[in-house]
Image 1 (cartoon, one colour):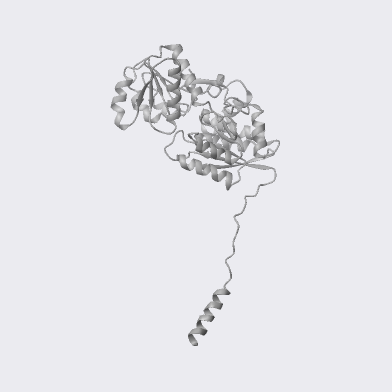
Image 2 (cartoon, rainbow, N blue to C red; image 1 turned 45 degrees about the vertical axis):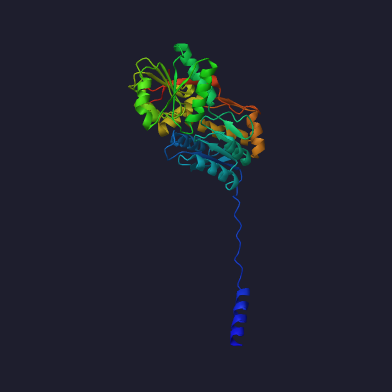
Length: 364
């Protein structure tokens, strides 16, 4: 009986224990008269270019428009050079943070997986570094596409020399692969049999030997892995580097025997054509030094979103306004259509040349 009484007491005690309270995940609240923008940047890690200049440009824009209505509430997230983290943070910005727009300032491969994530976000997603034309939906390319950049480089090379014997140099980094494919495809289109040279620690000696007899060399992806090999190119050779070039890397090639160039906005180099561009160049230079083209594109990304948000911040409505608007930014004039979401005006693209530390590059 004593055992039975004890068991009943324990049972009654268990049944009367309070159930744990379930706290729902709070939905982020929006300040009246604001819209939220999440920017994904490489502020650490090995991926190039570093997102620091883009962060400086976006913070400059936010400071200059702090009293605007509606006001952009900017959140910057470091994706640390990781493609997988970039995708995770994109999904988190849309699903958990309820961002009204997302700016991706890191290199990505815009494949089916990434495109699906953009569509599921259901808000405008602006890319400041080269991707393929999203063609529609919620993705917008503010930089030239890899195919457009390939055409620009090879048109310039063809105007200066014969393309026979041109070499495409590439490693296996995610940002180099789409550029390599675009360069190889455009050479084939021009009836030139392309030569592909792989870069990497095991191929460094072979690559230097190959470049020693080359006239036209096109480097796919960030410049840093190719700096030592590029110095092996002969005097008078044409060395075309990527839109992803870091100016500091280009400074390391100032004594290379070949002519070193890379593509970027002619307005950022020339500093002319509009008061808005001159104002940006002055303000940014005072804050962080000469701007890069990706920095200017990041500044323009917030300007594009501000224009689209004036009529309301519903994601689908902002997308339609961007497709119907032409906006003169500081890097270029952007124009999209419902079926074309690559908005960079190609006449604003130029080949740039390094002139010195803390100075803007010049148009070649």
